[in-house]
Every structure is written in C-alpha cells, then in structure tokens.
Image 1 (cartoon, rainbow, N blue to C red):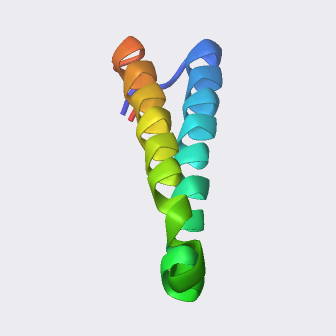
Image 2 (image 1 turned 30 degrees about the vertical axis):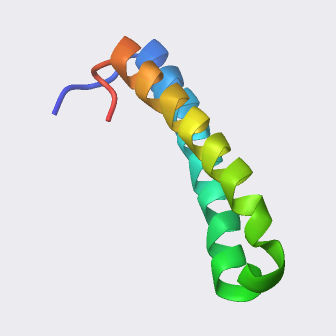
Length: 69
C-alpha cells in the first residue's frame, strides 16, 4: 500500500466531505421512507436530484484524483 503525501491526505479528507453530503441526503430519504412516506413523499424528487448532483461532485473529484478511493 502506498503512503499518501500530506496533499493527498488533504484531498482524501475533502473527498470524505463530498461523500458525507451524499450519505446525509440518503439518510433523509431513508427517514422519509421509513417514517413519513405518506406525508412527505413529495420531497423525494428534490432529494433525489440533490443526491444525483452530490454524486456528480464525488465522481468528478475522484476522476480528478484517481489515487483516492
């Protein structure tokens, strides 16, 4: 396993922030599905769009920094 430079470590932390945003949005969707689907289903399309955009950010960052996983 290769040792990451300080800059690579910072990029890895930045990637983690992008991923965390996706996970937080997915958690909101999960909560709606589990608890309030009948009253908050109308929020799902907007949340789905936000997840798609956040995933685009993750994938673009990973493409720019292919050494990160």
